[in-house]
Amino acid sequence: MKENGAYGETLRRTFKTDTAPSFVARTLKNAKVAVTEIRCDKEDTGLTEPIPVEDAFLVTIQLRDVHSHGLFIDGRRVQTDFLPAGTANIYDLRSSPVADSISTFHHLSFYLPREALLEVAEREGLPDVDSFDHYPGLGVKDVILHNLARAILPCFRAPRDSNRLLVDHVSIAATAHAIKTYAGCRIGTTTIQRLSRGQEARTKDRIAEHLDGDLSLSELSTEVSMSPLDLAASFELSAGMTIHQWRANLRAERIRRLIVRGYDLQTIDRMLAGWESHRLSNDHE
Image (tube, rainbow, N blue to C red; front, side, top):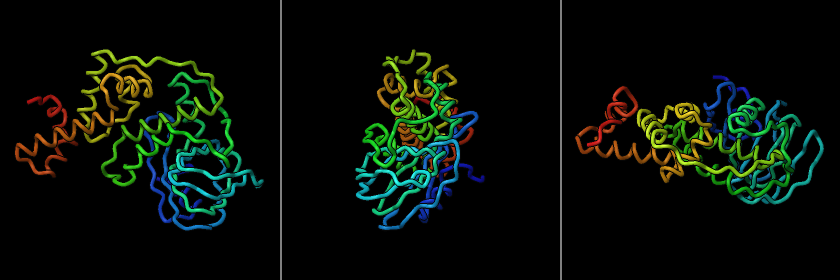
């Protein structure tokens, strides 16, 4: 499928790197949020290629200290500074940002098109957002975005083992956090509520039916009439772990039981991903 946006191959060409693996969150009905890993171990690689202008933003999380870099916005040099690991930088793609790559760098970039921002804001009950209050050349230390980036990083190391729930969860959380923190929204503190017994049971049943991870957070949240971000937070409060952790633990336990029964790993993979997964979800022996 041809990419249409500032992620994956587009960012690979922009930063002139050999690879730029990416994931696209399938949580949104009419839009997409993508996350791309960019890594360059060479110094002084020069100016990046211009990113095609579009109504979208890039939220970049530095995974390595960037000691020196330059930045041009609409052809004008802007102030830059040392970017320690964990720094978040937000780039408005309506303004043609071009970086001067002096130091080596390693970051994850969340691609947030306008339609995705609108949909996430609506789902999470947030005000509409058209811009972010942020200085992209300086960035800001953001522990939450840094932790979200590190949570999804293992998916890039083993893409075949990645799952939609984790990608969706991190992408929606990063988008909502960016809106709440940098869009000037004045959001009151919301109390996270535990799931009811019925909501928790229904959520766990649906996850158990899709141990291959082929279930989006949006689809899961629809089952219990909650927004994706609210479900993620309420599930963690109720179960004592994230949705992704609960799924991973359940999958590991299923695999252990099937190995004890004498199944080989190839058969187990087929059983967990195929038609027998629902039957296995009701097997409590």
